Length: 114
Image 1 (cartoon, helix red, strand yellow):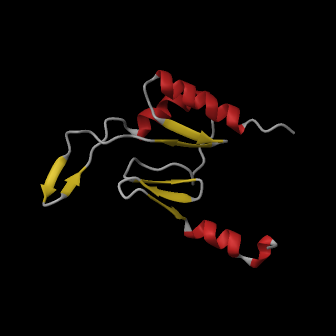
Image 2 (image 1 turned 120 degrees about the vertical axis):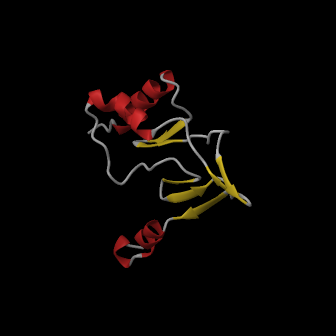
């Protein structure tokens, strides 16, 4: 049986790219949109900022809603400084990547046949 998840995700990325929603990346059917914060952020005091984003995640999703593609409830998240993607937490400001606890337990559990 052929797997077409990557084709559907590729179509979504094409729609978003033509609508200037980028950069977005995919791995098979796992899509993540990277959004840079607006330069007009709110300064809250000594090294604390409230970042805002021009693109709303709802806008990106509304573009593909007419296609009827089911949305995976555990994939995707609001824009922020870190993103959960492919079992890792990518922390952009700290230039670090951390393996998610759930992924650690998945591969360390005895029932995985290790």
